[in-house]
Each structure stands twice: as structure tokens, then as C-alpha cells.
Amino acid sequence: MKQFQNILVGVDPSQSDPPGSDKFSPPAQEAVEAALWLAEKTKAALTFFSAIDAPQDSAYLDLIFDKPRDLLRSLTASVQRQLDRLVERAGAKGVSAKAVVAQGVAWTETIRQVQENQHDLAIVGTRNLGGVERFLFGSTAQKLLRSCPCAVWVTRPEHAIDVSNILVTSDLQPVSQKALEAALALAPLLGAKVHFLHAIALERIWLGIVDERQLEMYEQRVHAEARKRLEEQVAGLGATGTEIAIEVVEGDLGADLAIVRYIDEHQIDTLVMGTAGRGGLPGLLVGNTAERMLHEAQCSLLAVKPDGFRAPLPPELPGGKKTGPYL
Image 1 (tube, rainbow, N blue to C red):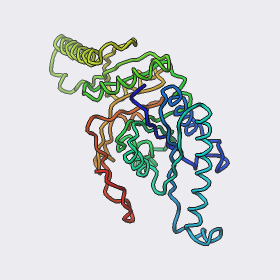
Image 2 (image 1 turned 30 degrees about the horizontal axis):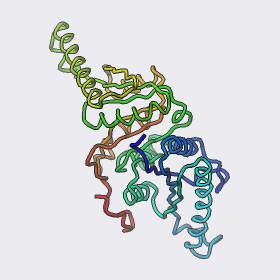
Image 3 (image 1 turned 180 degrees about the vertical axis):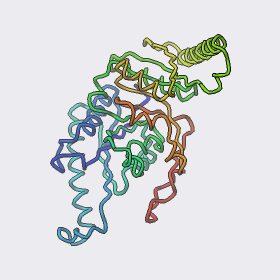
Image 4 (image 1 turned 60 degrees about the horizontal axis):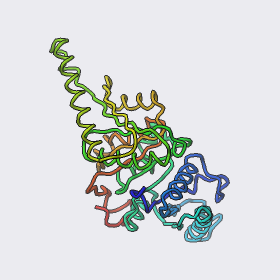
């Protein structure tokens, strides 16, 4: 799989129990295992990466540490040891790997690492946040889907490596063809079947003014045109050597629900789709389909960015800390 040869693995040190150990929560462990598996299969290089956002003004820090920098030094050393053990595991599999620990907010430092080292894939686990938590804080995975310039693979336990069915959704735009190409590169490694889906959401309000025969003809034309466009995207990749099931479905309550229903009905393990970032408040309120699928679909998600994607990050973090030249 030549697409992904320089992989970053986001490791959240807070998801280890006991702290500092190699025993991670299932989502974090799945990300590590998926990265080791993929790198061993494809001879890709791995970077195990953690960002430490150390507290600076807690009222209780002075009970343990004389200075905040002592806390940071201690945390960094502990996390470095964690990542070094992962590097050793990779080495035992013949995988080239290194460990990097940075200071700062996880999602911004992850993007900095991706840009500075030209990673082509970031692999992370995810924790399921409640609705209020997602609105106020989002999640590292969600923010990477929106802003990370490379492909992002968000793994879920038991859905990253043990895969039978891969679903690629298409909005009939060029990025969907890139998503299909990524899925076709993964499928032979996993022994998985590839489904290529376009979900149609017809406007039912104005359709009410036409008779039943006109409506039926219209729906047939829409389905035929969508299938033709999907077939053209498949043909554009040339001979693939992998069977692709082309599907067009209609979602009475919207495309998102149609995709989730298809995932459930066909036991999809991994969803692959194109995404585009939206910066600022509109992005927070609207998001995009990939971000919504992160919370609605109970499978792993591989999001591919369109050509020319530029990370929509602010020039500064709160407190004036520079994030680097992301814009």
C-alpha cells in the first residue's frame, strides 16, 4: 500500500491504566495495533506521538512540585518511556519507528507534527463523548477530521484489523475517488469486500406537486445518473483486481441516516469517505458528513482529504501560543 508510508500514531497517555503503563484503553490500544499491523504489511515508517498539555495554575501543584516545569519534566519522561516501549514493539516486528513527545494541545500539536514531517496518515482512537461535551469541547479525533491535512484513520475496538466489509461513500466529487482508491489499497490486506455507495436525499416537499408517475420517472432518472457517476469513478481507477459492489440508496430522512442504516444492515467494519474542512464558527455548528459519521456510525472511519486541502486553524491558541504556519 504505497499511499501511506509515513504514519503518525496519536497516543493519549491519559488512556493508560495504571498511568505510565502499556495497558491502554480499548480505543487507544486499537489505534496502536492497527498502526503496527499496517506498517508491518506495507513497510511504512511509524511515529508514536503524544502531546502533553500540562496544567500551569492548579492550586494543588505546589503540594507535589516546587515549579510547574518540574511537573512537565516528570510527565515528559514518563510518556517518553511509554512511547519508547511501543517503538521496541515495532522494532520486534521489523518496523521502523520513533517516539516524539511535544508540549501543547493534542490536536494542534498533532497537526504541527504532520505538517513538519509530511505524514500521509494519522491514526487515532476515539472516546465517545456525550452531546454537550461534543458541542463544548469536541474531540481530538473530530478536530483532526476537520483540520488535519493528511488522511485520518479513527479506529474503534474490533473494527480496524478484523475487517470483512469496507464501505466507501461518494458525494460524486473527485475526493470520493481518492477515498475509493484508499479503500482498494486496504481491502486486499484485510481480505475485505468493498461497497461503493451514494446516498440520495430527495426533496419531498416540492415533489408533492407532481403525480405519482412523474415522481417514479424522476426517481429512476436520479438513481440511474448516480449509478453512472459511480461507475465512472470506478472506471477512472483502471483495473483494481478487487470486486466492488456499487450501491445507490435513497434516504427518506437524509443521506446520513441512509449511510448509517447501510452500515448496520451490511455489517460494515470500516467506513472510508472524503472530507473537507470548514473553519470558524460555521464549521463548529455545521461540521461535515465525516464528523457526523464519527459519532453516528459504530465502525472505524478513514477520512481522506481533497487535493489542495489547507488546514483551517487559527493563527494563535488561547494565551497567545503560536500554532505554526497552518493557514
